[in-house]
Image 1 (cartoon, rainbow, N blue to C red):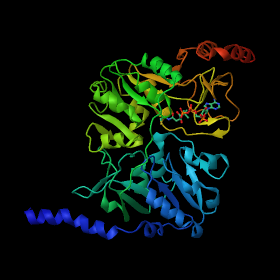
Image 2: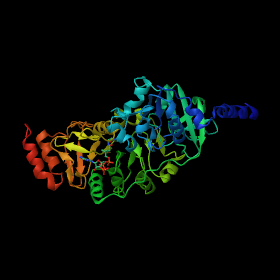
Image 3: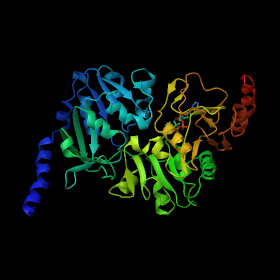
Image 4: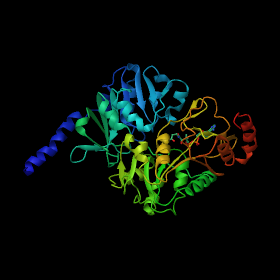
Length: 441
Ligand code: COA
């Protein structure tokens, strides 16, 4: 091929690309009443397109807005837009929690590993897919950036794909690329991604972090779930050696461990040498760190979260949190009674995968109390209406600031004793009394 021909091939996509560029308001005109619109997750929610869609609220009716966790204000979930938009949340973030609990939005419990198949099999149909990507490279490929998770399946099944091409979206590597030919419309922008800054861990969280750290062996591959506990754990791992990461999500805490040489990924048995992840949420520092960084292998959630894949990691150690746990080990993590709080996410995927792995550990870590110490999170019976995210057969270790309860291979009675021993001392007598009413006690 001559140099001229190479130039011709490489510029052809640019012509096609420029023909796709429209304003955000013109792109939003492609949405029609009754459509199901998928919104890219986490920090990749396409803010300009969402704003333009909301501007069309007066003329749109019954548009389903489908998404996992998203950052941003999610204005479409507001009461005044109820005729126009109805949210179907596959994970409940703070921005849609009120509308879900007021019955104006719907929640779909589902394993993160299985969401792509819901789209692929059209069990959950998608008409319009609105994503946010990095600018195209020399070959016309954009990166899904900070959030790969379920986006490929959503994009593949949508009738119309609208891409917000953001100069500030990092170019992440792995199965993270999409060619501009897959877009129907492009909206260009240059805006900062939303950040989530980790709060400094409380005393209780630091103690939980130390207790969990005592279970983490050198050479382990870690998954860290969502919430305030994971960051506290990462801060306690400075003296570990040769850790690896295979996790659905990551936040800032991991950067220091990489820079200290604690996270090497050398002992990993799946994708050795790489941090395997489906999305990151954190500060601008994290977004810059993952940009063009071959250390990170971004992959879809049907791969990263597949319990079979997870279980092939030697010493896979999964650490997730809970809102409430009963004395038999049933974990409520997406709801408090019938108040819906978050989602199933990858908790069960990772707990199951880690439990099956050679020398794996499945850990639930939670503070012993909530609401400033007024409520025990360890209870005789889950609050009426609570959904069980992780079953009692799946939980191996439970950790609070009072210690570690090992439940695997234990009877209900033994579990009860182990869990009461790590409950807050103020609640242990009441727990004993409540448990006496249980038939099997
Ligand atoms: N009773 C009443 N309120 C409770 C409670 C209980 N048993 N447990 C927690 N709460 C309250 C807390 O006080 C807090 O209230 P506030 O916001 O007013 O302070 C709120 O509920 C959130 O609790 P907290 O423990 O701080 O949540 P978190 O941000 O650490 O997240 C989970 C914990 C369980 C919600 C989170 O890990 C999750 O969503 N898990 C399910 C999905 C998952 O694990 N995925 C894995 C990989 S992403």
